[in-house]
Image (cartoon, rainbow, N blue to C red):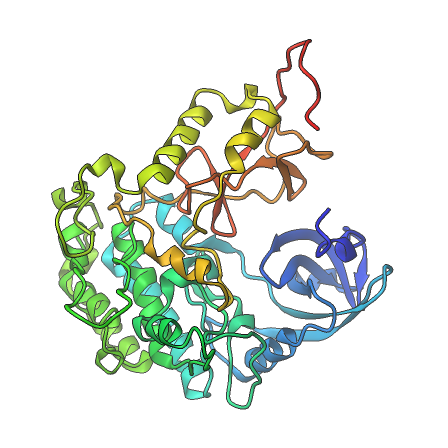
Length: 452
């Protein structure tokens, strides 16, 4: 078992953490595990989300508590409580409790049905309101992305994971030029700062314009099914950023605002408060009621490439890593349940770049390289993979898992699948920005040995 999860093996349904009774383990992030809890003796109060630190004495939780307490906005989780949990295995672990938000992750919300420009605008409007609230308080979220947004059945969008955020007077907790974040969503100026100061380690000062850019990346992927092209290390000719309206049938107002958010010059991006007003105006356009559909141009997988001569073959966009990833998907389609675990293990051990969705925490050149992956155009709302279930699937093998398999939410999984990144499609499952395949009953030959 992962040493980071060992202290939390004792946290099972029925365990009490402070005045809170655990009902279900829900999710795990980079720094904490989330449980669905109820207030002891008051089940009528409903469910709450309790986030328990993975590291003892984790100062990030103090910072997240300060942020949540200072922000009053419908798109920011409501703060309820904080405290410390004494693990039976030793160590004190901070926890915080916030409102329970019942909803779908943003990209899954988009995948569930075709959406209109107006529906997307309403979501972006709420998120820009949350960011405007934070920026007015001197705070920056630093990890705005679809994986950190939940959309309720009523259409309320909530921005989660404020533990990566920073506010006035807060002390940085990570080394290197950049703080926590996810490479594919980082602003051009922050990436270029990191590249320029990789040796000195001089700290980049996060700004509200970084959050606005990340919201632009989120919206671009939401509408087109792909990321904007990667940022060049050195300043030069503008990158070949195709307007989203060329790739999907979005309204003119939404198209204009997305391009403004993605402007390489931070001062040319609208402040979050101005963006909120502009989005509200864009939602009134008649054309905003139309469904977002891929345009004929979206079929050209070279559309989003960087300037320069065309690649030799669209089928080789990502090189050997992509070829390997498609081979793995083919194996899944042909019946991965019948493959022996050690056969999968050999395939999964091949090393490659991290997912564009993987938080890089501001450290490691390899993490920053994830922004340099291929950017093929995908059909809007059809490119989003399945979210990792909170319990084993029917027929899925449960622990003890075999070598080469990973235990997630009580089930055994193969992965992360090399060369695949979220969105993972219809055959794989998304987990922390990586792709996994469920393990069913393994069909073994009588002469086969157990994996070692």
